Amino acid sequence: MKKITYIIWASALLLATSCASRRSEPVKGRSFNANRSEVVHGEQLFMIHCQKCHPGGEGGLGIAINSNPAPGFVKRLQMRHGLGVMPAFSKKELSRSDLKDISSYMRAWKHY
Ligand code: HEC
Image 1 (cartoon, rainbow, N blue to C red):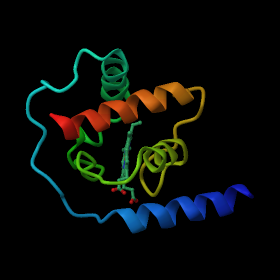
Image 2: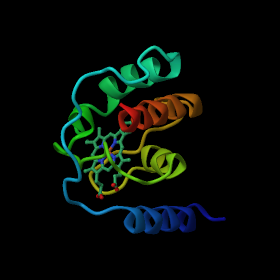
Image 3: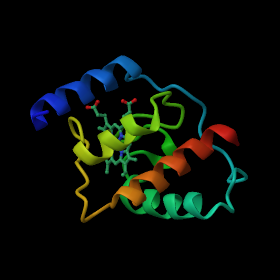
Image 4: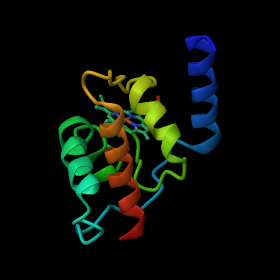
């Protein structure tokens, strides 16, 4: 599939699974699964790359993502390709396993 087709599909999926409003209460505490190493690593990466726009998963410069129901692969597509104001993260910045760890961290929010 051509890259542009891929991006259009990804955007359509994102639109279908999201809306721009705030969806949740702020994330409180850090009691969730915090000792799983991929979650810990995902949190570190999130703090470096994502926190400035999605503080604690809430909306800031970016939109709230802590209760986004989209499946992990859609979120990883968003990280890799960006959308609108959100920058794309290249493989040099975040490897495939980095993206997975960030996904695990974001999933952990829901279980706390
Ligand atoms: C420069 C600010 C910025 C940074 C840095 C950033 N984002 Fe975003 N993000 C946004 C904006 C703005 C949107 C809304 C995009 C749109 O719809 O135009 C967004 C959207 C998203 C969405 C889709 C939410 C939805 O419901 O559609 C996810 C998931 C997401 N970001 C995750 C991340 C992750 C994970 C990182 C770190 C790897 C990150 N973002 C870094 C600004 C940012």
